[in-house]
Length: 262
Image (cartoon, rainbow, N blue to C red; front, side, top):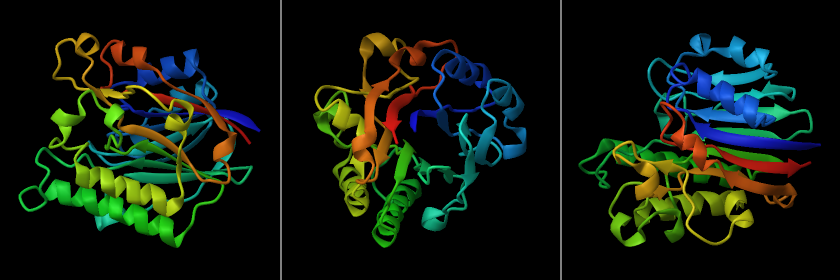
């Protein structure tokens, strides 16, 4: 069964309901995973998405922060959620397709501004969260699984606009890159995007702080699509929809797409 999957940190699904509707209308992915919904589940504008054909929805939410949702045109069932690092945050939800493929939608903590857990509690929480992702994958070796989301780490040198200048900036520090690499290795996860696009600068996030994000192009690839080794070969067609970052009142993230023939 072929399908197209997309992941997008929407930075408030209620504020940007029209942008989600536009993406669903123009690009029509079969499955859209959203992060940072910033809404209790009962206040996510689900009816509008249902009218566009996305009648299968699994979500976890909380007021004003975090929140993850999976919108699908394909039937799926709720496959639970995980509370890594014991934060009590709505940062993960899983859904299972009728084919048995499980989709894990993650929103990893951003980690604050200082890359030092001794002075920045949020950075420690981020490292603990990714360590728990590693341990989970070791204990539950993923099969027929896809992991997507805003992982808030740009692992490769060409995943950031300047490797040298960002080595001490949260999201690209060596300790974070090493932690994410360990989590990926523990599950044998295949980075679908970089398998399809192996070379060159590639970004999915551009800061709001830049007055002209497009011209400055100081981006980072924080949003990822991974697949378990048994189905990674079925993935293709990866792309990042950079123009979406330029829509009116946009999220600071652009959606990441991949196709699967399963």
